[in-house]
Amino acid sequence: MNAPASFPSRSGDKDEAQQSGIVRVMIVDDSLTVRTIFKRMVESDPGMVVAATASSAERALAQLGSAAVDVVLLDLEMPGIGGLAGLPRMLETVPGLQVLVVSSLTEDGAEASLEALSTGAADTMLKPRPGGFNEEYRTQLLDKIRALGAPATADDRAASAAAAPGNDGLAAINPTHERRAKRPEVLAIGASTGGIHALNLMLRRLTPDFDLPILITQHLPSSFIPVFARQIEVSSGRPTHTAEDGTEIRKGEIVIASGQGHMRVCRLGNRLVARISTEPARSGCLPSVDPMLSSLAMATGGHALAIMLSGMGRDGLQGADDLVSAGGSAWAQNIETSAVWGMPGAVAKAGLATYVASPDDLGDALMEHCSRTAIKTAETPT
Image 1: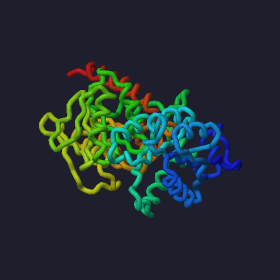
Image 2 (image 1 turned 90 degrees about the horizontal axis):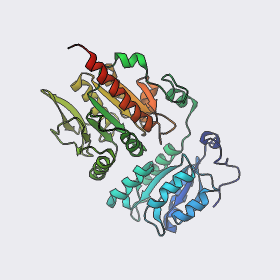
Image 3 (image 1 turned 60 degrees about the vertical axis):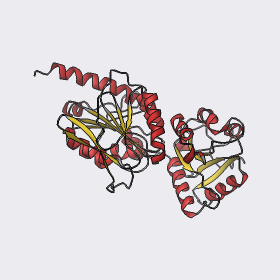
């Protein structure tokens, strides 16, 4: 069905389109029963409305040309081209569209779900078996939709551009802090909702000349991690490992936190190694970004750089604070390109981020920043 005439058109800025505060949802699933259940769940929240429904990706694409939509609930396995093939065309049709993959494939088909996340879907959620559409599920679904559909506030936009915005509207590296910060020996990345797409975009900007070890904590179910590690290895062109107790952190390689515990870093002589911890984290996440960054600050004496990518919540804020206090640096993804500006926003609004930009620009800045620090190191008398 078409969106009510009182809702603004998609043609303007997303914030202008959401002045009413209503999140407009499209449900795309080949099952009439599932579409009906999701419609009831969405419309049980007064801050949401079902703007359209579709039984295939083709029908969804046809409606996206006229219906104003903020968030799409997308099934992957449907007749026709299917949700996975239709996703890139949806994102191209509606710039800034947020897509939540809700599919039975998210558990048994992690590869398809992660491909969707790498393509630009913001998050995934399991479609439960019959009888599983309960109150707990409804709450989780609406929380995700609410986070994805929330418009950016003026305060958030100001914080995103707070680090000396340049003519291109992006923040610039704070030169005073850059001179004061210690030369990084490790790059650590934290991400959640919307982070996988951002991570792929950023890593693709790094050439083989960038040889710092890379640590990644991405909020994902443990069953997704092996597939995620393989995808990161392909997209980055770097040997990629899932962290185990004692995994060595080496130059030119990537280590990813498993879903079984937090990845902590400790020093053994002149080597850095991963340790696995299951102690509860302040954020409640497993794995959590905070233990990775806090332990890295101690193990390297602050010789590390943290980057916070798109994600819900504030995980990583305490760890970034510990790292910056030890002399390290923290960067963040900007609000314009984040699916949810929770994690990067928390770091930026706390005044910890010295560079705030898009994933592509973060990658380019990494190349330039590490090139400059390498030159400075070579020029420093021994």
